[in-house]
Image (cartoon, rainbow, N blue to C red; front, side):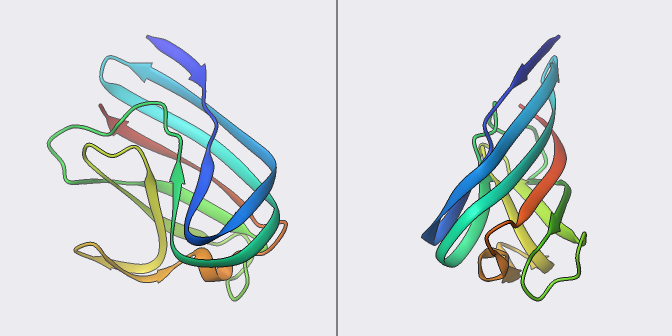
Length: 130
């Protein structure tokens, strides 16, 4: 049994962000990990490409190709306040892909990068096996 903190960061295909808050906690029991996080953006500069959450405390393993969790957002352009975002992980990775719409293979309908604004918030949780 292990508990700890981690620092979530938003990784974009292009552009940059700065943060006013980055908080992450986790619990690990055996090879099962449950993570909680919250990010609040301070500035956003020309975001583009895929948006993913990096910095997870352990890489995803297990026999499932995709493992998912819940992500919520506030203050996104073109999205209802407090609406959900789909999240996915690929085994061996240590990032959470985030997108609107349906995932088909590795193709996402709409990445989140174009919806970010200063003061955007992302928070959620994900459970996975190492």
